[in-house]
Length: 481
Ligand SMILES: *Cc1c(COP(=O)(O)O)cnc(C)c1O
Image (cartoon, rainbow, N blue to C red; front, side, top):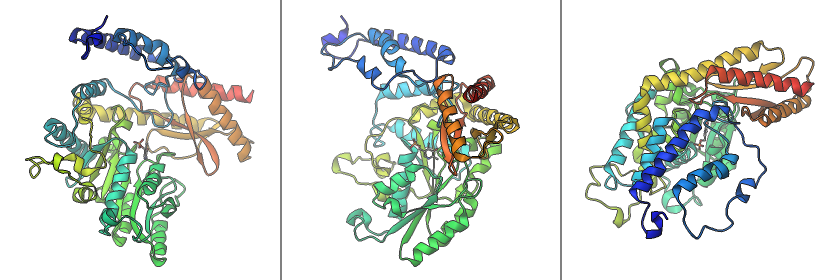
């Protein structure tokens, strides 16, 4: 019998025993991950079928539960920590970050007010300052942690709208002018989702065309804004992207800034993926111009080796953000309100996790140098592979590779029809992923089906990339046999 049957939590002895067993299990998991398939081989519904129909009436031991991970959970795992996971954006949960996350769950504080956990608020403010300094952003930028870039961008747009002082907070949107928002046709879907959520409407999101390197065209932006003004719309915000989701292109922020200044529009920069490399001195230029933006988001959970979720949002106008979101009922007032920052005032949510702990562990453990070296290694591996793709007679790249994400396809000579190439590449991707030895994703560029390979996991070595490249070539040979 274990102690839950007596009421109350597990006993300290039981906690220690189970925690040690779990950490042992995880250590072994990380040591052998390389040999596991990246993707599971299962049919939809098959994980659920093995779970009990109803909630268990009686409890069981945590030791037994840890055994169940292997039999019930592992068969359906897609291993995002795997060194040959190259789909979407390759992310990683590093050892110090895992321990920081564990600690945050254990403390279980709610960082809504300074008073409800001074360490949580003050550590958050400090790690946000460290990251701001590492990225080379100016001191005026004030930072807060949200869960995701989607939510950070939603807050940016809400602040941009609040700055217009149209009384929308009180009156809603029904009597408001028709607001319009500008972003590139390669922007992340979260921009449009935020516009939908805020009642701006997806048809008022203007998708500005891109150049041949998939970057927003500042002149086209200016023209679109002028046209909207002539037609009675009220432009209010521009969202530029540093590291777009398909090709990781970098919008020309230094040229977008003057357009925003000319029309007095809020500039938000979505650097969810592309921000982290700015901590490498030679890559700081990717954030050129961002010092003049009104807000910027980057995701430590994407490329700073902390687990989901952690999104870092900075703005030079925190008072506007607060004006948009602060609403304080009597029961949340404290004696310190005029001396401290209560982070609940700067967003939708009241309850806030102690996310700063995992960042503190990670930044302290690796140091800025260690973090920069690791990101740089991913970029170097991608650049080497880019050369190999360019030299290969059967493959071609379809976009520049400014960071560590490659967009390429098979293109045998004489295959000139787009449909035929798209079918070939789609089948190639299915074959690659069915091997379960590596995981790639895809995108579409000018109607072309493109394979997308993102290198960024902390465990990925040049040998993993080399193995993946060999597998890709083998799969193409089989596909064409
Ligand atoms: C990943 C990504 C997002 C979405 O990030 P979430 O944190 O999952 O919401 C938004 N924009 C860009 C450019 C991204 O790369």
